[in-house]
Image (cartoon, rainbow, N blue to C red; front, top):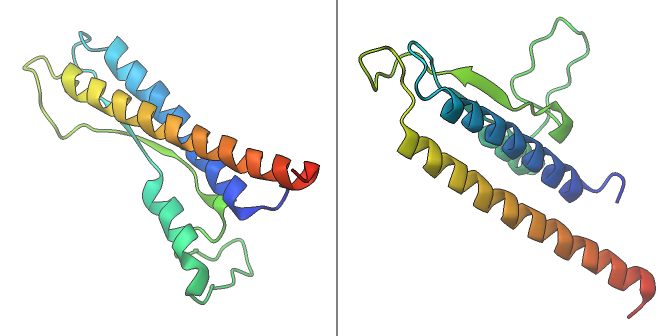
Amino acid sequence: MVGDFTWKVIEKDLEGLAQRFKATSKNLAHVNTPGYARRNVSFEDELRAVVNSGDKLKMTVTHSGHIPTRPHAVSDVRPVEKKIKDEEYRLDGNNVDPEREMAVLAEARMMYGAMSRFAARKLGNYRTVITGR
């Protein structure tokens, strides 16, 4: 399991979804706070780029001052939490739409559950191979 690319992707996906849970919960907690800017967590595009980069030539970064064009490994993908300030929902400056946040929360919950089931199935496959049954 150590060094298995699939496990690294599962771990990074669950990490990003957990951070999205926190940000969405924070948004819902501040639904009545004037001037609060909602937070959004993104990581899927970078993770997808790393997963799909198998057939692309990787650029080598030989110096810390070099600017990488994209993440080169799953461990380089970082979930990014951003404040969304340019949307308006209410006159008091708060842009949290509770219905939208509940939809984001439901989607993250379904994705987390699916990824957890996938990890459990993969673990079951390892168990089958190890025990020989």
